[in-house]
Image 1 (tube, helix red, strand yellow):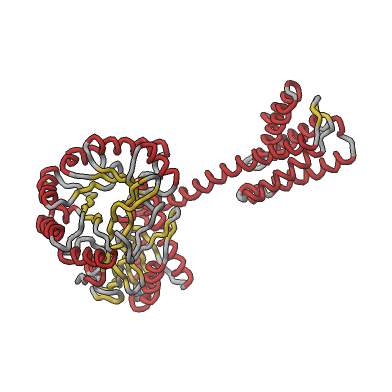
Image 2 (cartoon, rainbow, N blue to C red; image 1 turned 180 degrees about the vertical axis):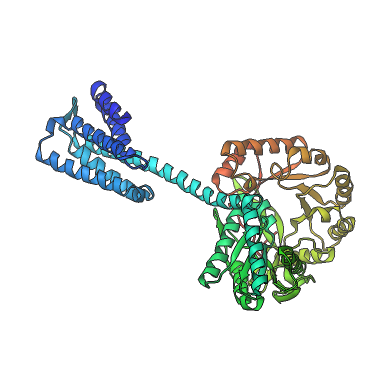
Length: 558
């Protein structure tokens, strides 16, 4: 009715371009309503009646002319067709815009030569078609963008709901079903296999890319497992145990019977890449297996043995299958070897005369997985000092890089022996020109002050990473007098803040850095808009995919 009201108002009060504009608004409001579901038959009939009324009011002067009647029939057929297949049109921008061109063409090309004092020249008719089409293109484009975003988020929230289910009735129901399966198997003396799957380094995905990225990986992994087992037509039950751990139970199957399928699951997970936004995230899984024994009394007995096997998989380097304490598949990585590790590099840039120039490099630890034939995040970043220094020397020898940042865990940062070893390396003849240590997990201020003194004596600078996200101002405030740099990671905040909020936070931390005489690095720069924002704030150092991604270092200039 709003559209019809605008139409009548336009005919009664407006002339010229205003008449054209308001009639297009009315036409679009009336036809757009027909593209939505949820209306009963009477309401849809009323909507069509409103469209018919608008046609009559606009085309009254030539209503009975043959071209007008033909256009009217085609117009109604098109509108009815688009209404009937509205889901198709509303989910495909190009098809909707094509339909809008047809609807507006039939409407305005059939209009009388003069409409309420406005001569309807060819240019005016084209203007009417263009205005209606642009309105449709913009509105549906925006709606589709929001719809796809909401759809993606609903899909991610589906797993969040499933996770919460492990803490309430869903979890209780599942545990009751598993208990009944075990009871039945003991009574009937049928085999049953119990499998626990835990995603390796899952917390790092959550910490680096956010909870929604973790949910995307969990959804992908569970879908991978279900697809493979369903294709094999295996009878199984799946239950979420924790955020990154879930249980599979196979009634009437011994561990030996089901092992080929579990190997297939293990391989499928490690070979898959799970999409989140523009990223492809890879994970591996540690698996613990056991089967039902005659002396088992309840579910807890199986949980204990499966937990024990899963723990062994984790201790021995992750990404493996352990059955009743015996490694079935996977490589024992418990002994670290230098050749298994390498530093990837990503540039930290400074703007000079409007052009990015490399200021330093961040070195990011990776380990090579022979079975996956690719470099992955290591299970543990805590390498011994001699190995870290050997890897740093390798980067320097291969590339000529002599200024770089390395990341230390909280335990490494507190290690005085490591601090002294790195200090000796920097002060040696073959040491780097500048070494910066990045830390994310801060210790207490007294420890920070003591360790920073060791590094400061040798010229090593300390950078607090992820300020404003993992590290709030309250957390880092007392440490600011002892460090040299801070890094603000936009990628950690981009999904839960608006552009204006992100800019405001970056400005706060940049100002904090300036007031404390610290170097400020803006991380997570992905496009020209980020660069423009940084220029407006006066930020001069950057890091992010806009410049380069972490990669194995080849020969390059320092």
